[in-house]
Image 1 (tube, rainbow, N blue to C red):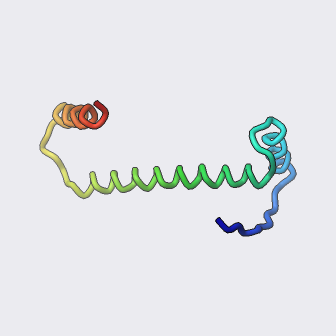
Image 2: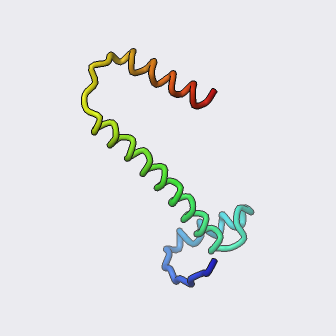
Length: 84
């Protein structure tokens, strides 16, 4: 994987926060900490997009004539089939 060098500007408080995370042993340097933040942001965004697609699918499916209990039971059955 190729890397790209970036220059960023932080507040003193942000810099102190990063240094504290490194001092606590979670990271070895500033770059490692920032890359971890980026990875977590990418993961969160991917989850958001899946949720957004599911919401849109629900909206696109229209109004159901099923009761809440019927919908709930179907959801439980799908969950049980998927997760054993």
